[in-house]
Amino acid sequence: MYPGDGASHLPELTQMEEMLISPVHALVQLWQIHNGQTKYTGHTCNFPRENAIFHAKVPLLPEECDIIIMCRTGVEVGTDAVIYQDFRVRRHAIQQWLEYLVQHHPTFQSRQVTVDYNRLNQLPVDGSVHDRLRTMENEQMEDAFLNTGPPEATDDAAPQEPNPLFSAGFVPNMHNRQTEEEHLRQAAFQVDEPVILTMPSMRGTPISEHSGHQIAIDAFPTLFPTGEADAIAERDYPVEMNDWALHLIKLKGGRFARHPRFRYWVLNTIMRQTSRKASNWYLHTHKEDKDLTVEDIREMIEAGDAA
Image (cartoon, rainbow, N blue to C red; front, side, top):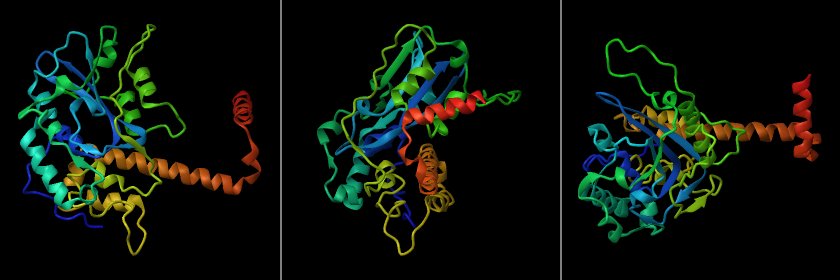
């Protein structure tokens, strides 16, 4: 249950840098950015993948990362200092972490993942890679959508209701089988014209949560630098994921509690596990329903709505 003390002697990575060295990508990030009169405003939305993607070669290039920047046409992205820090990449810092992982992380030690130094040399020595990420621009994006964001840093800022788009990215609908691309199309654009949305290129291999692959240690290598204490690691006694996540979030030092993506992945995984268990319970207690077709279920739902 103990993931170790971490690698505090190594440089702290930005989220962009951590994504570049992560063999597993389980989330798609949508950044909604626009510049106000005096300050930066925006949101990050994490969309869960249907299947996590395993990359056998790192570091990834920014063009291959599951990040999409959405902004209004004409908005110049990357001039704000906050945005620069979000997408900052330092080649030497990434090299230090990769060398450490090759020596201490089981996935790297087993050569399931190889380090490509040609790719490493394509990363900036120290600079922003926002211009190499996928960007969606549209003149017809509604002002109501663009102007949503966290409250401005003013004393008189009134509390704002959470925007439904970003709440949807946090708590998924268990019965919604739409792909990530369909979610983004519906959420980002409210126009009649067809929109061409280019998703990040999938160069990895889809992996199943039921395959026994330890996803957490590969998706968040800076949290598990030695690959210890994954959710499904072998233990003398089984541990529920709820207890595992709570233990890590309360861990001394706070590196799990501070991480901006770990809690999203944990919540989504726990909710899908709960939904799956509930489905299995229903099938075991209502065996007569196993022969129902999709059309039968639709008719039952329609009959219930009519009643």
